[in-house]
Length: 374
Image (cartoon, rainbow, N blue to C red; front, side):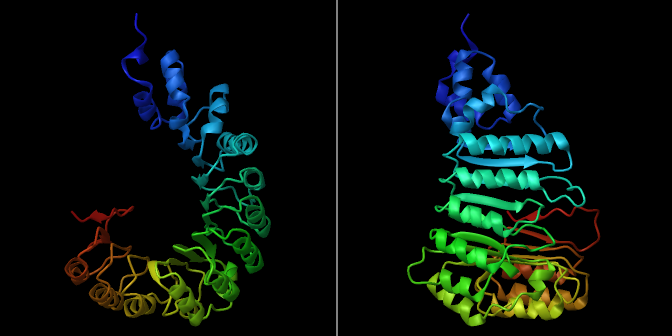
């Protein structure tokens, strides 16, 4: 009898297997010799997504261990409050550090809630180990890691991964522990960084000057999160510094996220006129109308995505209508409060490139789903 895999060439099987979750790849590898060869070839593992919530315990089977050398880009999901999920994630990261010098990209995503007073030392130690070993690492994304990131991790990335192209540290922690000095060392050690995500307190005037230096590689994205007390107390970044950075990198896009911890006076210091803001997320406990009007006045040429979480008001509706009239290049707008019909009409009429929006005219059960424009 012919083996099942003999009916399809190995490259076709590999294209199929690369879309399977880990446990299904393991099952496929046990069907026959042809499927086992296809399931372990490098094409299947080059870009890999692994969920430690869905896989069985004992995830580091001989099959997975044999394939780690082929992993170039890994997206790893786990739930920090579930011990089996967390243990599987740390074991996998530790194994990667010892087995995968060719790792190019690592993205960690946590699901659910983390335990109270959990510093995540086991997970962060594993990330440190990866940064020490994976000198070919180009992309590191820790935005969905709910633990406090510190100077030691940034310095380890700077020393261990000089070829970094993107690094995202702008996670949702309520404490900012990455100092501007560590970021400067990172920028000096990683001259090819094109995308960087940080809390505002980690940035400095000197960092803007380094990024704007004549010999610097093009910078495409700067994501700035303002969410913790350190961000509110951070010295303002001068408008002329942003202007110099924008002249040096005309394609630069800035993502700005402002959270409830920021007092009104901090918001006015952060939103500088020359910042090329492409994405603006406002979730403020105080005035939101002012920042929306400011964006309409100063970010009309660059703004592509707006997200607003605020209480409904006639003043906010008027500010949104003004922004719609001025920001013709807008692609997305998501407002998580009820708006009047004229707001929806304004965005549909003035923003021809709009792809999706969340603009509800009546209260609905959460979560609110966006509407996609055909």
